[in-house]
Image (cartoon, rainbow, N blue to C red; front, side, top):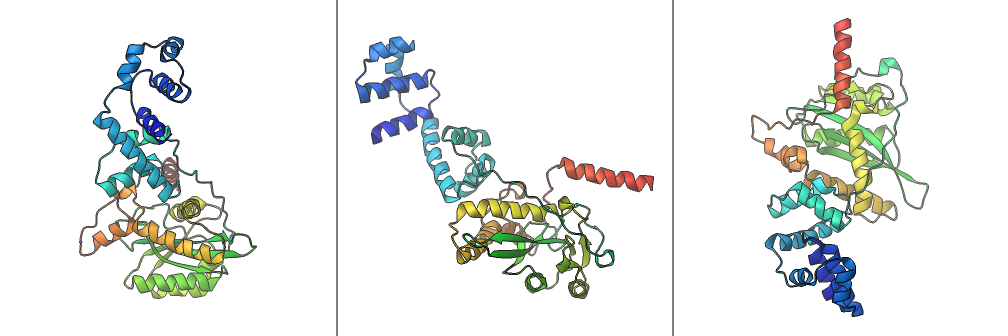
Amino acid sequence: MKKSAGNRKEAIFSKAKNEAKYLAVKELHEEKNYSIQWMCKCLGIRRSSYYKWLNRSISDNEQEDIELSDIIAEYDERYGSILGYRRMCMFINRDYDKHYNVKRIHRIMKIKNIHSTIRRTRTCCTVANKADQTAANILHREFEASKPNEKWTTDVTEFKVPHTTDKLYLSAFMDLYDRSIIAWAISKRNDNALVFDTFEQAIKNNPGAHPLFHSDRGYQYTSPIFQSKLKEQGMEQSMSRVACCLDNGPTEGLWGIIKTEMYQMYEIHDKEDLIEAIGKYIDFYNNRRYQSRFDSKTPMEVRNEVLGNESPNQYPIAFNPRISKYKESLKNKAQSA
């Protein structure tokens, strides 16, 4: 049966006409001893064509597809089915120093029925705080930065501990230049201490940073103590508008990425597993998760490139119609004012 499975794999990637029919004839003859002449007549194919196909030599391209299919299956298992065909192509090309076409990877993934996990839409809403404690939305969805530590975004997200009613909260700061997670902290409580700890870690890692600091209107960020910390560091504060999750789109997107991919990649049964998985995934995200926007580099590779470089590379954000529409509305308001 192993030989039959191997032949089936070879046949799958062949582009010969009547491929499925030839394969059926071969398997039924080997396994059931059905007459080749009778089957070819029933299927409307010539015996000579069948024997020509049977004795064909596998082309180099077909053999490469077979080998590539094994690599794709291995990557799908390694990363817990988080790779769609575009990212699968990027990962394989980067790791094997190849230049496979996205369409080729997509074709093989469809043949093998391999596809990425679909990310669920995250619903969110920020409760309005007192107006005198909030800051204006200075960021205005300008999610592109020209250098590190120019713009930071942050938020807190919740994780449910499996098989319990307990919860864990993750606070993270993201740099919009390279989309790296520059600081993070986990706590049983979603409180000021969690955010303060993350802030102290971010300053320790980036002592000379004075970025625009953007968040939602959570009470941790409107706290007078936290706002004084920002002023001491020379940071200007920016906040999303009420119930406008897109104002903090990159961080909201980060939560979706983590919660979709982390649970696919790691076994999580209890609180300790969850804490370990969060740490492992953040390390993977920063150091091993290639991104097409960064020319197949990781966030930390992009960040490290800037060291000693007076002219940081620029990585434009792909066109987003919703953000473009928002910016157009701001322009119209400014003109009518």
